[in-house]
Length: 460
Image (cartoon, rainbow, N blue to C red; front, side, top):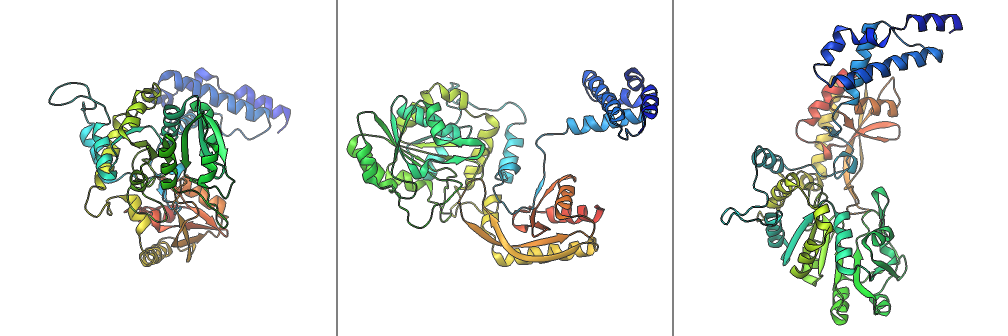
């Protein structure tokens, strides 16, 4: 673009007021705050000016065209940050996609119980204030045999507040093999520092014995700690003391034991040890997530000896980390599924996904592949054996056999094809294997296979 052309376009560029005066902008201002619309118009005019000065094609510079692009900009900028999508990745607890899918019972409870005012922390009979998590605590105690329980906003918070409550200003002993870092740079040494607890490392990365803990105990020891590795697994020449050994040592020396179980499990999900094992072993406090293997909303569960749970609740940090009525409602409804005689069934989406038989996945993949071939014959469609993942630092190193539907576009590479699916409505998240876009039926909910077929049918 020559300088003469640039100058001509700049002279023709409409003033902001001219764009603001269009009927389209007037309609937009009936939907959004006028100030936001004004700023968006200025931003679009500035973008056009910058494109001209850079010698790029600015597109149409008519006021109506700029108004239309402003509308599109606002729609993108103000779109819901949390929105429904289809998870075809095969990662059951996908952190980026909200981890566990809430059970229908939890969604129904939110709609039913939170449609108006809700009883959160008032006793019906006496009319007095009660602990807001009382109902959840009762169910957790019934499910695990713990003396008491409480809940905070996630398991990271549970770890910080329990460390601070049990050993502030003192030492806590932890195996070097458990000095974990999980997502978001959540590193155990930093957690200790935040909690006001001094870290005493014992053992080695791959082998730690109860005798290592015993030798490290001194006058400043306030806690024995076990931490689940969450997102990695050390195999081969390894050893860690059992929770029973740690509790026995703690009782002998008068030192409390904290067991941070990470994902947590209320029922047997091999190879994970259920929460009840730590309760039965006598750990003073146990922490775990409510939104991983339990399948509820984001939350951190704390349970164990009543004395220590009460101390946690009296910690000034507790109010800063407490959960709201949305979390309590969803968590209570989820926990009730575990009260069934045989534990959670297919009403619990995460458990259904984790337990679905391989032969059923083969049938689902074959059926989906055939429907895609019929609806979008331009695509190269096949099925292939592969593995799903639990995800979210749960059951590290464990995979689940599955059958994928692989797609290859004649006009786009896999990366561009996957991007197009993510930008659809609803967005579809997939994974790429050997330059093909793959769909894992394990993580598809009812009706989502039909949605995928329709999306692929309409894609260029």
